[in-house]
Length: 413
Image (cartoon, rainbow, N blue to C red):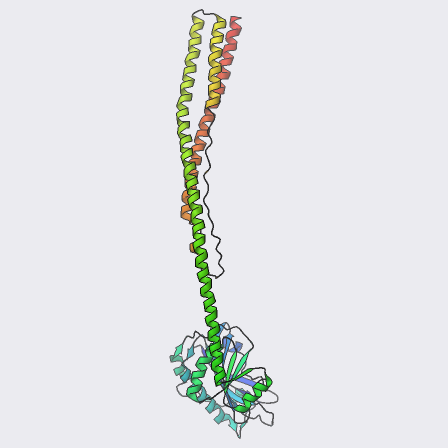
């Protein structure tokens, strides 16, 4: 026996037990403990003498989507004449169900055995369902060989609504209606079927459960399908709207990317020009240092040639002033332009709870742009350090030279 098939018998027994149900086949004990009772709300629906009710019910049992097929027939309680009493059986499935005709056949067989062994003169002869005398239907295990998944109902939310259908319960007709009723379980927790007019009038008069004829049953199904069709169309419209938004978002995002790339290309070219100019400036500065060094040696030669001291000082001061001005004007580093970090973001939302990973920014593209920025930053840092070193050397040079010149002046004085 498959673990997802359960067989129950139940009934009303009067004082002291009232309604009781017992499992005669159990798939899983934890699931069995969570299954709701199959008692009837006699304020909404009630069996009368020689009447029968079939039902199909949805529920979530221990977290599992479950469908139950049940059959009720009128039976009196011992030592009681109250109305609405019954005896019944149910086949309960979790996650999968058997073929409809096989389920109905085995349900009818088990209910027939149950009544034959436990009812006399329309009265239940035991006082508790645990005391039922039963035999399993022949080839009951065939149910487990014909299991199938079900698409309907698509939701197992409790609605606290039930539907009563007044129609033929002949086997073929009942089989067709039970299959259709799976769809209606999206709107109702339980759908009952009976061919007893008295039951139909009773449920209609109470008004707690919706009561319809065969024609009304088909109308309910058609209305459900129309509503489902409308919901699907709304979903299609939402998807089409999202496609339109996606195209507009693509246009904006791609334009932002192109604009950023063009701007970065311009900045990159400008930075390249600045770097090349800085490279050329290095050679010019080096030449200027070399020229001033020669001027100093030339001043030394003037000293050794007995030239006037004032002329030598003037010669050196002019050269020194020109050198300092040149260094101050030509050793300032040209700061590089910082490239934009391109990070365009989509304004789409996950309102349909779909997988939108493909809308995320392209990380590979971003990393490439970041790498270019880092390379430019490295060039800037190297040039800045180089110019700083040149400036420090210049300062030390002038400090040292001024010291020698003051010494020279002191000696000549």
